Image (cartoon, rainbow, N blue to C red):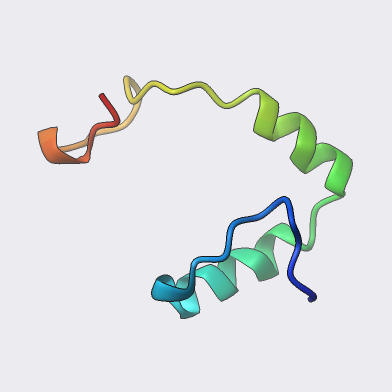
Length: 55
């Protein structure tokens, strides 16, 4: 897939970013765009360590 201006390039993550691109390419771009607008900036449902939190 060619570089998509809507997705950041994650060169330092190498195979992980390549794999997520493979997964996301299976979804309709409209569905991904709608999902991206529904993402909130909260970690309440995730079992994170203090240094992993976004706040």
